[in-house]
Length: 118
Image 1 (cartoon, one colour):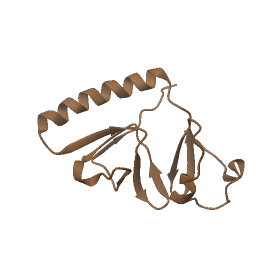
Image 2: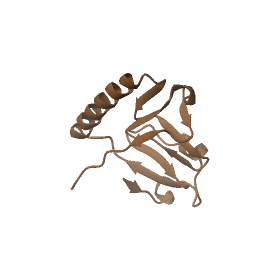
Image 3: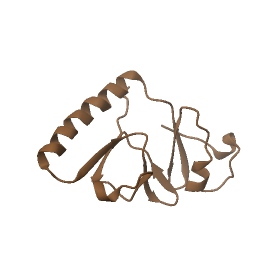
């Protein structure tokens, strides 16, 4: 995960908003905002995607056993925590009723972001 100086992308030198985020290019990178700071990550590698899939499979089984009206989605899917904070966790779980077609407006029950160990 890398915080990008806004001037590198030709963006204004201020806290960014979700409107600024919507203007980001569709170039294979994941663009997220945390407290108005742009976070840019490259497309995930194969090992990362395998780990996400395995975790999601286990979580899916647990959700099915609980019988609750929960939904699990995988990135990219927007979780909106504020006007200046929009993230895309690798895995997000929340009550089905809390999702819209485009985003999860509010905190999920579970958010997982897998990071590569160095």
